Image 1 (spheres, one colour):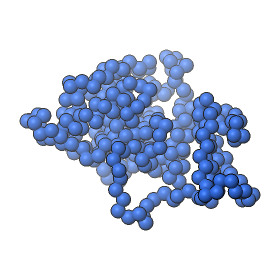
Image 2 (cartoon, one colour):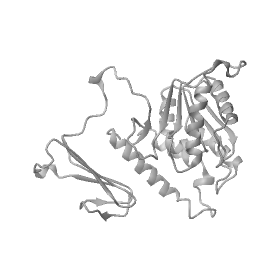
Image 3 (cartoon, one colour):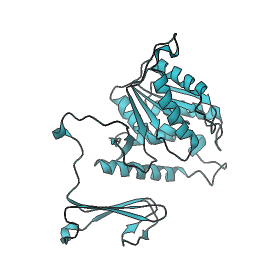
Image 4 (tube, one colour):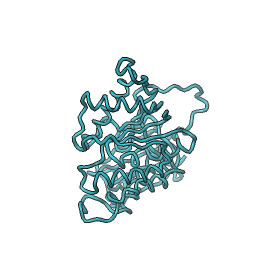
Length: 299
């Protein structure tokens, strides 16, 4: 099998949250896509490994995948060792992806950044001809890092406005994780809360490129542009203010203005967008919430 795009994740339901919309969009464009989960999430509070793998197969249908696999590595105990790298490199040679999507290299869960390390090094190993004389070498052309849960500026954002609802359907296929249940009820939010959270995040990244929903990605290399006149995403107006809140209600203000001290006419009154609940007033006198809040002066 030769895939155009392969997403490698630590657990079932990871890609559905971070890059599922992009996978759907690529599949709808005619590309062959796949997902390889390293573990079955067997250390999770809810669900058995068998349940989660079955749910991942159902989710894969929503994602329009050509391939979905699971290496059954130990959950919460992923290690970047030679055995794991060789196992993953062999799978990359088998699937021959042109593009690989990995989790970002920093994160709360150790499995996520271990997955990133393993994926990157396995992509390199799989291209070494002498690694295994019985299989053909293959090194992916491009590695992308999903940046949905990182606090950094993405290299680019994919418009998933038309794919967002299907992505949510894929995620909610994991009924052991997102259905009603007593186990871990204090840890697992209800379905409506999940929808609101993911919609808020996707709206934020979509706003960066002027669309409804987006998924962010990071690349380590510079990106080539052949035609600067055809560049997408309009630059901001000469005068705009963005105010972002954090969970501690701290405020970061970025003022992009040729003359920030100039007075503003009434037509420059900012529009306030609130993408969460729980209003507070920060020291800068702007209305903030626990989630993502921003005010933009109209063009």
